[in-house]
Length: 350
Image 1 (cartoon, one colour):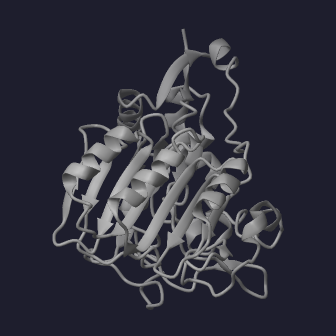
Image 2: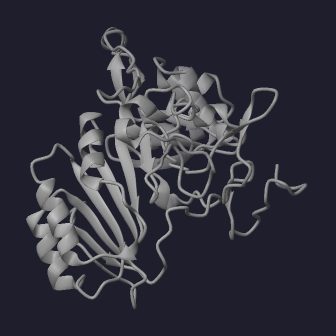
Image 3: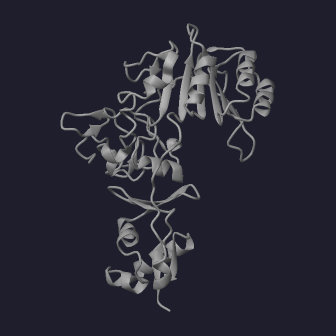
């Protein structure tokens, strides 16, 4: 029986300027492929291997392609009748909440009611919170806070705080054991870099870092550490900016922001009614600016896995761009520091 090939829908191929990628969304990994293989997967699906060979000059290469695809379970072979029973997977994204994640900041001058803010964002459907403190807070402060949140609907809580003598490893291990929704407890400005985590567990991470705490990470370093390959992020990235979409930030002064602290002077007032602020079009203006709409990023093969925090800027002609360069040049397929890398602004960069 003649068999045709069917691509696994959870493994979509994505084309960049210099090379392509197969996103393996179920196994949360990816594999670089040449553009020719991207063409096979997107233009010849539903054909037999022999039919595909007729469209290319190198049949032996096509054999190698299909050996790779079958070995990695990126495709399967079916009869034409079986193939016709499949329907394409649509990567539509939505979430039953106005806000999905929030960053709450504290310093020595913060006076806003943190418990009240937690209550409001929980009512907005927020499930993931990062609490960031530039000052040292006693261990008992976090115990009281998490005790009050123990019956909340938050799924994960991440804490970044300055070093304090009470934040020793014994206390923090007991803390993450007692409050399993704590994804990570990061102590910055520590004497040395140390990290502790249970094997193969994404929650309960304890880390001491020597660097001073700073949420405004270098906006030009969209490195592999910020890549995530999964069906939720991939789907969201089709129509949204995955970093800013449905994100809320409260700075140390109690002002509401929709971007990282220090990257934009604009802020919103109205901490007494956060919903009213978040529902405005102006607050949500960055939510629906996907990488496909941003210059350079639209040509990058990593665009559906990258959680870049840079703020997109719109020019007078309506196009979007970033004022700072990423550390990756998609026109050369090179990272900053790699041999042959050139910045985009250089004559050889594009």
